[in-house]
Amino acid sequence: MLGFEAAMPQFQALGAQVVGVSTDPALSLAAWQKENNAGGKQILLSDFPRRQMLTAYGALETNEQSPVYRYAKRAYYIIDKTGTVKYIKVMDNPLNLLSADEVLAALKQSGAAT
Picture (cartoon, rainbow, N blue to C red):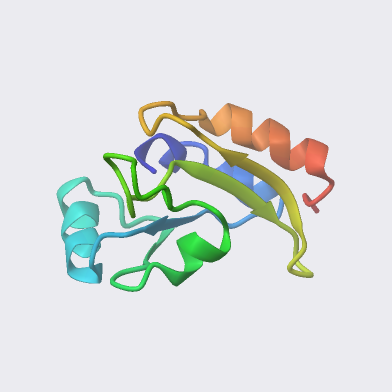
């Protein structure tokens, strides 16, 4: 999320809202935002403890044999104003990140930008 803060004006110009979802408890997310001065225009939601949103969007490791079973995968979604998912990118390795520029390009290509 920190890498997206500088690109927020570009997302806003396209009519987009950046939302982060984490499996961490809300208090942990608030502390992280404060520590990293990241409370700007980004929304950070907690999917703790049930992880329903991550499960619904296929962003939770469900293989019981995996050493990271029930951990969140790094994932990117673009959802238009009608609620239609226009873009999905779920990373196999949580260390792999898309840049804000890559997500902006996907937003433009998806047709979800205004």
